[in-house]
Image (cartoon, rainbow, N blue to C red):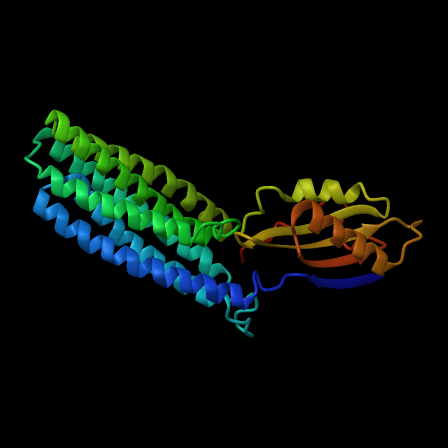
Length: 313
């Protein structure tokens, strides 16, 4: 005897009012970031500071990353369609992937330019460099304040915030570099700090990109691989075996599961009670709210086959 159950306790990630509010914050961040880019580009050319120009390049990528993230947030509010049955949640992960790749490219460019500048340091107008960097730092801190608390559980927003954090650290490095040059006239510090900026950006970018690829390849959530979930479910008195299980992340804060569950012959619980018990466990222990479960009294496949190894044809 088979029993199919589909459980969906997900509220489309977040209420639309919160998403609209988040979009508004991103628009403000985009406008402020673009102003910072123009200021640092002009300031870098005028002062001859590579650190400032490196920062300007990073800020320009921030503008694009924030635009991509804003568009992904907009798409995530769109309803599911007959051809996109999960809606557009994956757009946020794809945006995070693009942001991560652009950050890796930018860090490579910064390394190259810093190497060139270190070998032949040039004169820098320190006062102008210092003033422009301070203005950029204030603007970046304002953006971080705007987006504070929004990145929890959302890889897309986190990737955008990482852009801004990297840029904030860049501004700090430029300010420090300006102060050192002002006091010591040691110009190579400009290139050394550019190397440091590039390293910080690269580490963050690699982490975000790896997580985005993890989700895009439909891997299971970090805390809920199939074996761990199956063992946990088999500890329930009503469950005899679990097979043909699939666990995957649709986006950074939305996981789904499908499985065949063989129930104990002597259980006194009804099918509805068993399903409720299993879904409660999956929600509280693993944060999985979207499930499709098939209850069986006799396994439809050989027991012990936890995973279904689908073959390419």
